[in-house]
Length: 128
Length: 326
Image 1 (cartoon, rainbow over the protein chains, first blue to last red):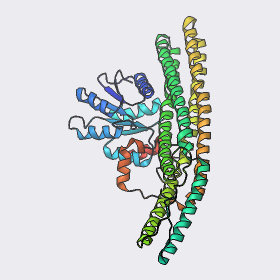
Image 2: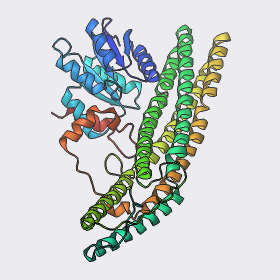
Image 3: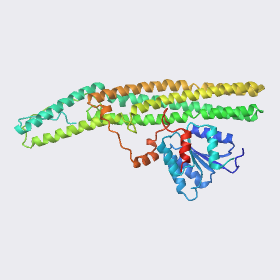
Image 4: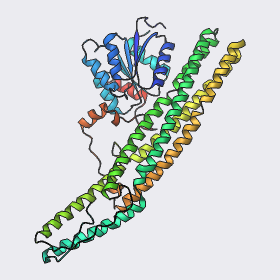
């Protein structure tokens, strides 16, 4: 399995533990270029300065939620095609529909494992 | 509430029924006030909720430290794995991935506790409102004001009727507040939701600790296959992980205390409802959920549900099916 060397990933979560878990799992899968942000606002700031191959974001963050980040990304001409995976504990159908309508590419429910994360990345980025 | 406002004096005959009615209402309110004073609802906000919040803070801290220690150990193991020959390297990396996954307990616990704390804050505000409305906002019971009998003016009948209406509205508001204390975001029982979230914290911690300990057993097996200092270094890291797993015991014990405090709060609220003649099961009115509610909820962190408790929410396969639909 070879991950394109130029595929950079932005991981957005307000939990330092989750950031560490996701980043380490991504490294094990083979990603090397990984950036982190603690909320939607921080992520948008990073996205203004760098292009990302995929964004993996939690939903439940303040002040800008993952859903608001997704809406901002989809509303931005330059960023709108960036693949976006929501990783969240919010499993209510209303939330999943809201994320889908906002243009999320895939949705991972916490708790998750490395296999699920990899399957969703393959789904979004294509086989690697 | 002006339940002890001076009333009296020679009354006009047409005012007598109104005076009788307001006197009956004042007697009733004073009786309710005495019963509620004995229940001491103000203790919920003054003592029980702060104690519960302190305990929850301890759980958050314990879990954060434990997750940090386990993740530090995982990163150390990764370094050791990268130096190890195959097949030990591959086996170690697989076990490390399992350990990383198991550390999500810290995030899930944090989210569940945040929801419980929000609910506690909500209860605290409502109890403060009810206590203030019943004249129990703190300090010793107030003495009724000195009554000075004045002749009743001709317009007193209509003034008394207005006062009667105001007192009735006030009682209705207090009953509504009590009723709403028990109602959760979806109109279900809030205290039950809080209890379920707390029990789910214990379940998560137990499940994660078991997964971590199972991974440790496998690490020990791999360590035995690694010659020299490498094997001993892996065993030393495993010992650190075992130590960090004490979070499960501390979490379970502390959450059990919060569950017990929640039961005390629930008992007080039940007694309060009884004293005020509120019957939550019969009086609750299901709230209609509108489209704007859903949109607001989706973007409002305080309205998110957090991790589902057992039997609720969609699982990954259901979500995958929904995502594939057009």
